[in-house]
Amino acid sequence: MILCRVIGNAISTVKHPVFEQYAVMVCQPVDPQGEPMGRSFLSVDSVQAGVGDLVLCAREGNTARQILAKPPMAEVPHHSVILAIVDEVELRGQATLSGPGE
Image (cartoon, rainbow, N blue to C red):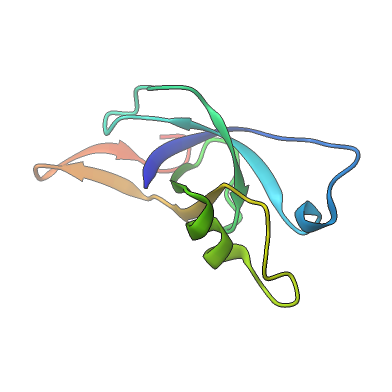
């Protein structure tokens, strides 16, 4: 799982049918202090996150399929999924990072 900040929405005029019911967000990995680390990536939103939210993402296809698959669409081609909106990160008893927009 990866701690990320949602930095944008992916907008498309034409979507594959499996993506029609989901929002796709641009996620930037961050460290526990909120500093960006690594490259941003696209992730399917399963928790109604918004731009500025601190989220927990899984970047692994099997996890995404288990979270998002609903019959009759048992096979969905998602690689990354937003699993949770994070309220606060605490490191050694100290709050280091807060949720939406800090």
